[in-house]
Amino acid sequence: MSTLLHKRLRIVLSKSEQAITNADRTFFQLRKDIVEGVIPAGSKLSEMELSTKYEVSRAVIREAINRLATCHLVERKANVGARVVALSPEGLIQLYQVREALEGMAARLAARYMSDDEIANMQALLDSHFDKVKDSHSYYQEAGDVDFHYRIVTGSKNEHLISVLIDGLYHLVRMYRVQLGMAGPRVSTAFDEHRHIVNAIANRDEELAEMLMRRHILYSKNNIEKKLNHG
Amino acid sequence: MSTLLHKRLRIVLSKSEQAITNADRTFFQLRKDIVEGVIPAGSKLSEMELSTKYEVSRAVIREAINRLATCHLVERKANVGARVVALSPEGLIQLYQVREALEGMAARLAARYMSDDEIANMQALLDSHFDKVKDSHSYYQEAGDVDFHYRIVTGSKNEHLISVLIDGLYHLVRMYRVQLGMAGPRVSTAFDEHRHIVNAIANRDEELAEMLMRRHILYSKNNIEKKLNHG
DNA sequence: TTGTGAAGCAATGTCGACAATATATGCCTC
DNA sequence: GAGGCATATATTGTCGACATTGCTTCACAA
Image 1: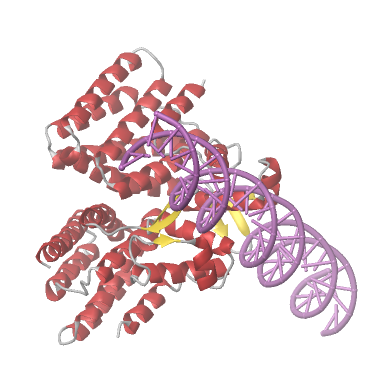
Image 2: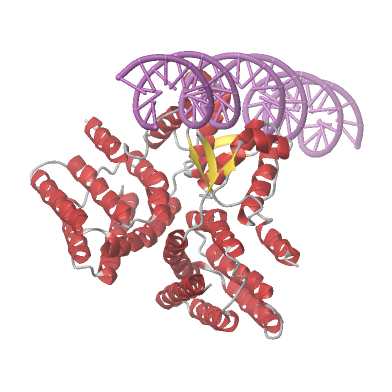
């Protein structure tokens, strides 16, 4: 059921995120377990315990935990240990504040640097998503949303932007989405917003592209906040 | 001569960055050596070599290098090793693109969340800097600039913003500044820009604060680019 | 001469054991 | 009974050794 989404994510990520070493594999596995709530938010990560559980040495676990710490998925205190971050409304808001700034800039840069081919590809992608979305369910939209934002971010051609968002923030966002149980609302409206953003990029209108992207993320934030307060 | 600046920086950082463990100390030392060019940009970081040089075990060096990799100060390849990042004009531009987005948002959030006391303190700080700057030299301006931007960023109360900028980008920016030998130009004009930004924050004008900060960083970028092309 | 492959070497990846530190337990004092 | 100090225990930090990987060199054949 959510396997499709995972496969989709894996395809998107496969270019940069192929596991070479044991530490890589352990890192990816741990990250997945944390994002999906298999390891509960706020719980302690014992190096010994995990090393027996994942059948690797403590050094490997340590490296994996260190990497998770740089993604802000866990917090580590010297001589004490590491804990999975706690989910809080404030944390989610802060996350979306950063997304608004970074993805807004990404859209601006995408309008400047994406090739015509890349833009055409993205428009085709949007078309194909639209066909699937119009009568289907929300997780397609989830995957489509992921695809869309990834293309914009990578289209910025900015290494820092790409790594902060794709290696860092997006996993945290997904953690909130999964664990607070908001699968994929705002299907049709979000889709229109995507369309407008791509149009602005195709017109090479940097200013508009950034503004529309910022609004798009702001709306998402407001929508999620509303859900948090009601449910 | 540049010891004053370092002391200043250390004071600013002392809250969050106190070295507890050997890995901490080694990390800070390595970062300093890389930023200041003691270890040249693009050079290879051999774990064995460094472990003898800094008189710690390879595990400590490994952890330090991993942390440096998350700051984007070094790049690591599996089963091959780590290299200090290479300095390039494109890299500097990308850095300032991200700064523009993040610090713009930081200024907006500072206008929203900073307390009146914090704002008053920042204004006083600016006054004291002005007294020192008006007949003195540029490294005061350097330290003052650092102080100013730190206050804005921390004033945003956004953990992600703070960590990405202070733990990550600022060190890279300093690496470029130090190694490309641009100590601190644009003294008076930059100072006026700081004034205007603080005023916007004091007036709780989020929109203007963000816009002024983005312009401020854009001007810095243009200035540095000019220097790069001429020198 | 050039290209292919095997062997050697040097560096990174991984491991288990030891040292240092923080938390928990229990005793003693007030 | 409450609070503080010392010990005890469990966890993290550090280390040196071994395993594995990638690069280099040299030989051999086309």
